[in-house]
Image 1 (cartoon, rainbow, N blue to C red):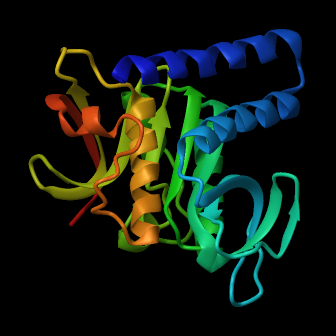
Image 2: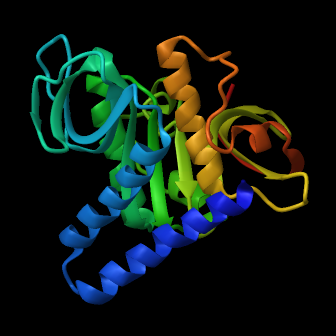
Amino acid sequence: MEDYFESIAKKLLIELRVVKALVKKHNPTIGTVTEEILRKFLKEHLPGSVNVGQGFIRNNQDETSKQCDILIYSSKQEPFYKLDNLVVIPEESVIAIIEVKTTINASIFHDAIDYFSEVKKICYKPAYLFIYNSATLSSIASFFNTYKLKGDWPSFDHDTFQMLPDGITGINSSYHLKQDYVTYDRDEMGYSSFFFNNEEGTEMNALQHFYMSIYDKVAAYQGNRNSTDLPVGGEGYQRKTFKSYFAFGLFDM
């Protein structure tokens, strides 16, 4: 099954290259297509009890979020508004929020941090940053370190940490960072990425880690986290063996 996710990840990157070759010098169109490519993947692999769209979240204080590239939400509650994939949905129906980037650098990453901070003020739900052509793990760590926080406090703390993405996935570099408790010389909060092999010794692709994380959020929302019904790739995911680990801290506990 890991070969399946590896093939899908390669297919996503090929589709991106095709679009960039045909639609040159028009980044908004390229961005729209890359979002739709990932939405299509999620629609095909998540349970039919959830919907995958794009649009806006409206909370109980009548506040509306910035536009979200991908919204995973319950099908049990009707959106306030729907036109094709574009929706305006109530806060309580949101399962996960995904921001999609074709590529990344320090400036784009810092803008993404600002974006998640604004969205989570409206709707505090699991949020992910998905990057097709990603930077290295060390570069992602440096992007955090060079981010200028608002206000007088110069470093991240528990409050600002909660407003960061819960997960960061890089497809071409194949990693899935998650918010985590990190211990080196001291106890810190930061991000970690675990790398696993399957039973055949093949490394699990980041797309599988990303998908399983999203699927877990769907199961938790629906109250069936301990269900015996495994998602695509779930059986192999349970038989994973540890390979290596990368982590960095952002602030002391």
